[in-house]
Image 1 (cartoon, rainbow, N blue to C red):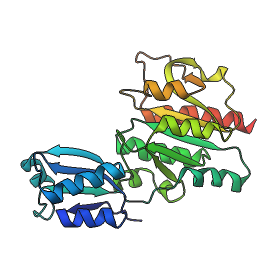
Image 2 (image 1 turned 90 degrees about the horizontal axis):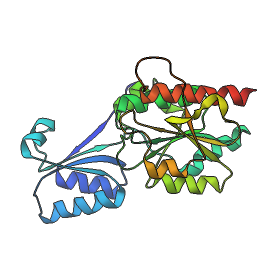
Image 3 (image 1 turned 180 degrees about the horizontal axis):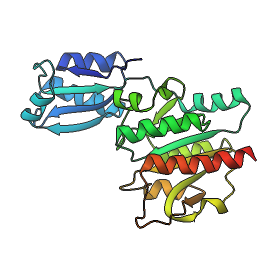
Image 4 (image 1 turned 180 degrees about the vertical axis):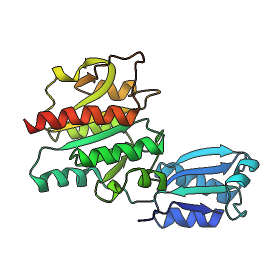
Length: 246
């Protein structure tokens, strides 16, 4: 199955895309451009939580496929996002306690795609990503997920910490992966659980980590002290799977 990543170029085209409700993940704007249409685009981008990057004309010219970008290029999601409630509904339909992945600071599309693939295989009911400082559902993510994106719902939220607080009211509890935590083998990871994973570079942000109930570490015996984010997600997820099966 092929995947299409929507590239939208030109001021009117980008404005119309926002008005039509297309999920735009990232937008590149000519630095210093302050005319009316561009100000409208900036307002729409902020209102919809799109990641804004200001770049020079040379960068836009290199990125442009049409060579008629008019100072703006937008990247729209290859897939529609779900609502968090839809993820919980999947768990209810299966008669299972919710099992969700929450991803903080994952900017590499290959990592995101691999994690979505793992989430599907581990029986998770969905994945939650933040609007800012994170990659969206691009074509690269879709390809790397090896088809899992067709079956595993992904929700995008404004504030990951606030989302955790709201899900706690639904009876969920949360564990985040961090090398300074308690060994995952010493934690009870059963029940309605959210697994929080950060990037290998910055890890889970302090504010999000403070919302978690437990911090889990993966025992390591080698000479380096960190795993790729998608590998760490897989190791922790399958410890959760093991405990849920027992």
